[in-house]
Length: 309
Image 1 (cartoon, rainbow, N blue to C red):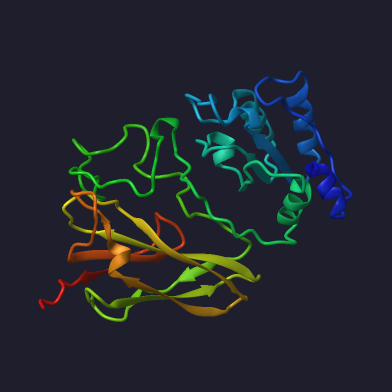
Image 2 (cartoon, rainbow, N blue to C red):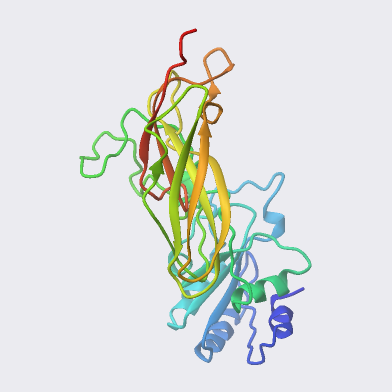
């Protein structure tokens, strides 16, 4: 089902639809028609992205950006100054530029099925509040790919406030994602309280409870995906800067708060060691409860050594 039909099914009566561009080629008069429609609109919904045949086997791309004709369309429509909502169809994380990066809202809808029109109408009109989270990181630039949220730390990391000379960094972009793994917004807002621990250390054969209070600070009901991350500070093998270890999806009413807890055990801290077997090593760990892989403030705990028998 098309987006147009979905909006009509949802009761939208004032609707103007123009095809401003083909997927990879310009459409004669397309941009002019789209701009004219945008000037007469209260809100512009711009459906852009890759074609389904641009993903899959033998469809690697050297530049993971929106095709140039669609980018030109987006820039022209954005220049009207009307509120711009982008519906982004793609089979991969894209490096968004210009008007797409600066849009008032971006809905990453990937490639949907037969009920796409109805589903998108529900999201756009607020009948349903979105609660999805990104399973991949969207980079600032194509050259950052492959970008992993759980990349390894380096011997020369960029530290805020210090010189960047001879450090691991890009010349043209931050060492971060435009939209990180785990990121996602909805029609309300949430705040995260301080992360607390049931104890300062995790016994070798015990458990450690990690908690934080989540509050819906907006005016609507909303679902939040609360995520638990760790970092092994020192190990025999270089470890990721963060690792997702759990998540909970919760529904909160406006003004409602809830204490969310996770239990960490030694098995959650294991990794494949030098002899290709799973091991955990005593030492210091950071832990976050956060809304994405590049947010939140960590607290630290220690995994204790096993008791000698």
